[in-house]
Image 1 (cartoon, one colour):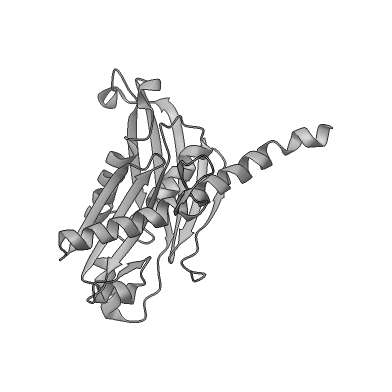
Image 2: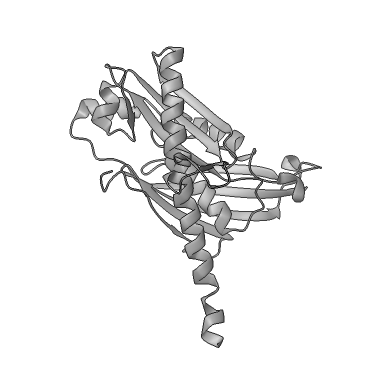
Length: 249
């Protein structure tokens, strides 16, 4: 894994927000802020659950149809993991600011990247996930996501570069819950069922880690993958938040 493909994150670094996170991977860097549960306008109020608002702001310019499409995908995915019924008649607001995008070596690669909204989706999902955890929003589960591209030779590539995206035959973004359920599957390009099954297996292993046999004959997931990365970041935050206790001893 190259330095660009290696994920990095920081939590709770913004003031005047209930939770915040910055996530960087594969050339994308996203700052996320979460506020909620907060008061919701009467026209958006839901009597039995909290409303969810997702705002995506591009690195330059103003948002357009691409950002609205990403917001719709994020909204439908995050609704599965947020316990909205715990806070009826309120609003959970998630704001995502794109701060950097991958550098392209050619104009054709830039055009190929602009034609698809999928490559940035995993970074947006992970930023949202970490910001929600930072804000202590009640969740039913966590999620992890990855980008998988299929080459002309039918090989699966994780976190492809813009040049690899240009040469790929199909692009896929999958997200899995911490329970192993498939939460999101977005695809573009030409592929058959066998190719998609290979993509699924590759994405599942990258998100949740490898299956290993435990001493009690139960199948467990090895401590690797994006799920382990999110867990590690939250463990570091908890240790940092509770460091004041050790200072009192």
